[in-house]
Structure formats: C-alpha cells, structure tokens
Amino acid sequence: MITKLILIEGLPGSGKSTTAELTNDILKEWNVDTNLFLEGNVEHPADYEGGSYYSKTEFAQLLEQYNEFQPILVKHAIERCGGFVLPQYKLKEELDETMVSDSFWEVIWNHDIYELPLEKNMELITDKWQRFVEQAMIGNQTYIFESCFIQNPVTIGMIKYGASQEVVMNYVKQLAEIIEPLNPVLLYVEQQDLSRSFKKAVQERPKEWSTGFMDYYTNQGYGKIHGAEGIEGTIAVLEARKQLESSIFNALAIKKVKIDNTQFDKDSHKNRITEVFMNAVSM
Image (tube, rainbow, N blue to C red):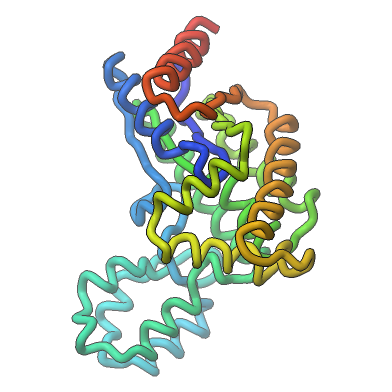
C-alpha cells in the first residue's frame, strides 16, 4: 500500500464510521495489513479519548488528596508536556467504582484533555501525533483513523472555544505537516443535505447523544456567540463548521478526495471507495 495513514472525515451523520469500516474491508480484501481506529477508541495512538492531564504540581496534589489510590495513579501516569496524562479507562479497570467517591471522578473528568485551554490541548495532541508518526514509520501497517484529524481541531477550536478560522486552519495544517512522512490520504464524506443527514442521525441514535451534542454546539463557543438554540441552531452551527472544513480541505497539500454519501447506499458507497483507492494505487 502506498500510504500508511488513511483519514476519514466529515460532518456528523455523513457516514464516516461506515466509510472507515468499508475502507478497512476493501484493504483487507487486498491483503493490506490495516489497523482501524473508529471515533471514541480509548486506545487511539494519535488522540486522547478519555485522558486527563495534570501539571506536575497538580499531580502531586492529586496524589496527596487521594493517597489511598497513589500506587494506581503512579502506575498509569504517563509523563507528557511538562505534566502527566492519566488514561481514564485504565483507572476504571483497576478501581472499584463502588468504593471510589464521586468527588474523585469529578476531579478526573474536570482534567480531561478536551476540557483544557485550547493552547494546552493543542500542545498535547500535537505531541501525540508526532509520537504516532515515529512509531508508524517503523512498521508496515496502514492505519485508518475516523474523525480525529479535522473534526477534533474544529470541534475544540471553533465549537468549544470560538477560535478564529485562522487558528483552527493553522492547527490542522500543523498536523498535516507532522503526518506527511506517512503519505496520508484524506477521504472527506459529504452529504448534500446537511439538515436531513443530521436529523436522520438524531432519529437513529440514543436521545442522550442528540441532547449532549446540541448542548455542546449551542451553549459554548461559536454557538453561544451566535445565539444558536435547539436543533435548528445546531444545524446553523454545523453549516458554519461545514464551511470551515471545506476551507481546510481546500488548503491541505495532501492526497485528498471528497466522496458523496447522500444516498446512504452501502454497495454504491463501497464501489466509490474502491475506485478512490484503485486510483490512488495507480498514481
């Protein structure tokens, strides 16, 4: 395979997960050694899904406050960017939640890397992408990532903090420079009718998802600045996100393809993805 990294991006409800899984299936059929990481994978090699960050001073305070958990906290702490990262899922595996106070978990959640100030989040995420590239260059696997290359910078930058287009654009460009040695390929999944695809996702997914999603999009950052409310306000923010992601896509100097999934026809979609990679191989 000519690439070691395939990036699947697009708006919520566009079919990113399906696209990532189909891409994985296609490459497996071609005997490519792949490693698929869908959105939300706690063991993601280039992102922090459920990671909490503490400065060295904060970590010392945490150990003092919860002295009874000190061996477990020290065991799982990873030194990064002037502090320590704690993988939340590993703490959950080792700590009996019935024996742990809610206040402990609240302290852990409040230090989630995606709750940090934007600059510190960018520092940690950029560092992890760099470490991933160094590791990926050694092996022969082709990695498939869903929704962490463009979506996460846009979500925390624009949606959460209301950062400027320039700040978010430069963040993604920095990541693109880091992954350049892997000869990446970007597949951006499009839907012609954003409102329809999002409302379809709302209908199909648990109510907790849509409630949390709309709260995230309307009660902070860009949505709050522009007075967005409810599902229509969420869609308006998504339209703005779509414009920003389109600008980012056009500015990226990597192999990239937009693929239309408006019809949600899995067989046709698989054929289009196959064609994309057949063309990529022949380039």
